[in-house]
Image (cartoon, rainbow, N blue to C red; front, side, top):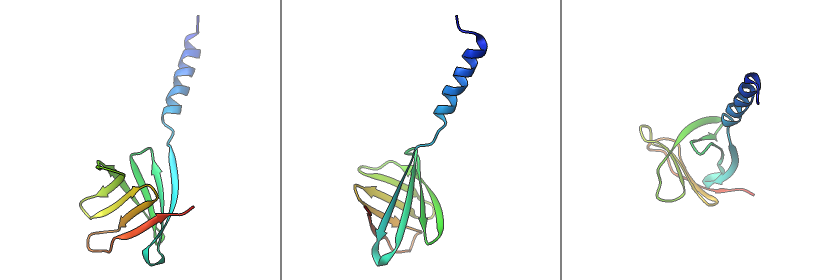
Length: 101
């Protein structure tokens, strides 16, 4: 029979394991020599670093690929395969990007 203290310790370890983030990083070369770094976190959002600023963009439903968007300001990061599109805000050009090797 397992002691209550041991059972609680095992339960705490299981909970700690569930809270770990899964992060994948990618670097993209974009139009005009721009570079975008993306950190994909738990499939929930992407942190995009562009021109020394980092923007957190939540994932939204997409017909294909992975789409992250803040509709209010027009911020968008969409990736499919090795290609990506990045829009900083409404009215700024769409950067066409390709993941580096």
